[in-house]
Image (cartoon, rainbow, N blue to C red; front, side, top):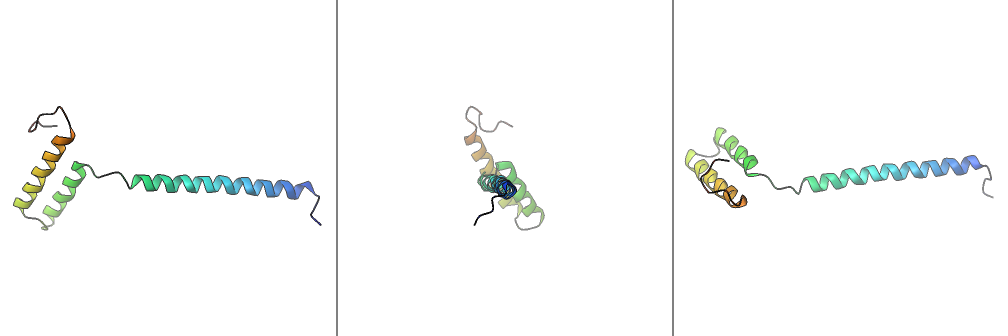
Length: 88
């Protein structure tokens, strides 16, 4: 026979509401984290990584110059209306 005391009803309802709120918070955090990782790296971030590799000796100066030139060309294509060779 189920308990007829309203205290059990309200405690169960409160626990259910708290669990739903906590589940919503966890779902939002997971969604936010999943969408944060999808953002592509900017050319500046890539260039910083290649600079670090150059400083650590993983790249030589010629290779770094070639990569920097390619990144600058790609950045110029992403910004319509900006003539190539103009500083940003």
